[in-house]
Image (cartoon, rainbow, N blue to C red; front, side, top):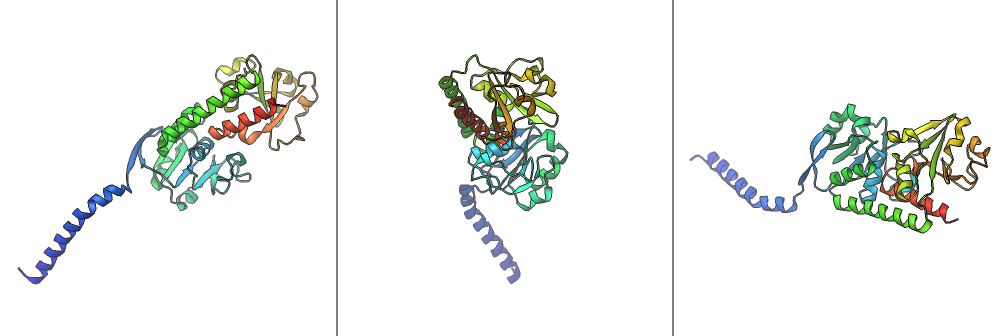
Length: 302
């Protein structure tokens, strides 16, 4: 055999030996281990323990933080207001990658994510582009029961057990509030002032479902069978009457302004309470639920 052939043969043999020796170490570390997650767009292989997560939907951001995974980037409802303060200091420095309606793909790619979480109803048109950046898991809709979406995020992050724990904590806290403040048989209505209308939120909404979880009943309306909210013109404001009336505001301090139709009807609304729009309307998820219950306890303890 010629010398060159001998060298090639020796190198090949050495490579085989090195490969054989290194295989157990690679398996032991399992740096590329994956899991399969079923979601709105099918089944996707995701990292066993994702660490560079992008969230494109409020419930995904809320849930990731609640499960101990701080995203490397997130879309927000408004880049002017940024990440909601109720998520706590651990979330305040998360970079934004556009709005929920218009995430910036180039900003997402620049963060080199290993998992992207989005929503088919909002982000379906660019699923393929997102999936080309990193494994991408989609909720079907932001209107689905929020607890189901929390569970999906838990599966995507490999933290299913923790997701069930935080949901259990939420349910237990609801029961504590109901028992401590004797809410059974009392009605509660959440109102959001918007332009020239007042938007009422029903039991299918996030905040409405939390009020009912805490023992309250939403004043009945036919629309609640399949609608999250309904708009009232100011002259119909008396239809929003309830034992507990909560009015969202972007500045929920003690001197927060309330809508004129409510202020002008003290007989119907003797004691309306301002609450933070960020947690009551947009803060869908385990941490948002706890923030709503914090507000309820504060209000009911007065």
